[in-house]
Image (cartoon, rainbow, N blue to C red; front, side):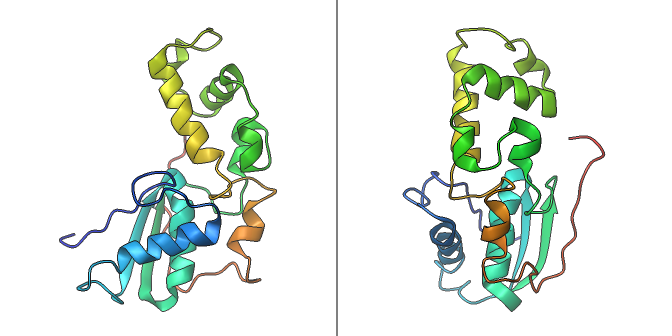
Length: 175
């Protein structure tokens, strides 16, 4: 693509201070229209993993402007990822897990040879702690609902889950 706008996670530059879903999705939409040459143009959204959740919200907000949505390696937005991976039903509850439990459950869901060496270790090295800090920042934020207790209300807040754009989801048989 010759004309790309990269949108980022909550807390990253330009998205600091977002305190709720509507504010975050609003900032994503503003970022798209920040350049006058792009303002109001149709878009195709490609998103990966946890980024597919706000992409879904943005596609819904943009309505007919979103021509296609391509979520890659992500479940539908109303399926509770937190429930299956970390055993909690809402983003703020993830923050309550200690580092060892957070790492153990993450490795059970998504095996990783490099991180596996640190399962059950305490204290964790700074580099591993930094990984867990990113996980906490992205998955425990109430701004991006991804648990069974908070996701359905956010994605269908207007009573409608559907978006206007066609969706082509790409997934692997193993996460």
